[in-house]
Amino acid sequence: MKGLVLSGGKGTRLRPLTFTGAKQLVPIANKPVLFYVLEDLVEAGITDIGIIVGDTHEQVRAAVGDGATFGARVTYIQQDAPLGLAHAVRIARDFLQDDPFVMFLGDNLIRDGIVSYVRDFEAGGMNSLIVLKEVPNPREFGIAVLEQGRVTRLMEKPKDPPTNLAVIGIYIFDSTVFEAVESITPSARGELEITDALQYLIDHGFRVEARHLTSYWTDTGKMDDMLEANRWVLEQLETAVHGAVDAQSALHGRVQVEPGAVVINSTVRGPAIIGRNTVIENCYIGPFTSISHDCVVRNSEVEHCIIMDSCAIDAGGQRIESSLIGRNVQIQPIDHKPRAYKLVLGDHSRIGLL
Image (cartoon, rainbow, N blue to C red; front, side, top):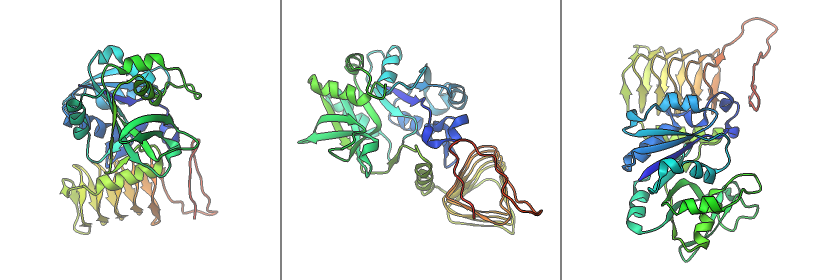
């Protein structure tokens, strides 16, 4: 069995971060979301993996390389435009050949992995297996209708959803899916929808089964999703201190201090992670905070945040919370008058002022 990971797309819901970076590389607990996907595939015994890439292909290639770090072999498949999940399957046919495969969206995070789904598919004699999750906002997803446990209908982001069973970003197919993706036509939004391909399989007598996910999952498509995902991953954190913590500092709960990091005259209350070569000085770092590598954070209170690499932050004793801060960001106080906010903000930025 092979893996097909989708790592293209524009990431519009995470702008302005995704104007300059791939959404799949935004870190959760200091590790890119995409890495969790690759690890889940390898855990399920899938080591021959194709990655669909788009405009951010150089960043994805640089981060993942040939896949050897994950115990896998990675092939990159360029998608010139985000024309739908079924289009991604279509252009990956030379890589996939006639092998069954798991298609996994590269910005999806699932707590318990995919081993059970792969084993069910291998043992079940089905043509496709989809994973469903009850959601409070079904209009935002592909939705499945079941009758007596069988999948009978699928629709993409319906205005009036008949169920709240969302088709999340994990699909398993055999080679019959190629007949489906070659037969369907673009939807009203100009994409080849995977829900249409699945409906084709159902309508033509192929066996499509579903499994219900009861554990945690998110597609990390919005800031709040990223922060919540960061929260539950950090909840699994084990204490590990490989950096330096001075005598005036205190670590409480599950805290990781990575090699080269320095904590000076500060309190860190876990779960929290301080990245390699990062300096924390005169700070309170609260729970559910991830601070990436090569940052300097001084004179600040930070809680329930993701701070990406190479940031320099001095909040002048003020508090930063529930924030997603991109790479190479500088925050510093001013001590002259008149006092004023001086901002450089990209499109779609959001900022709260006291």
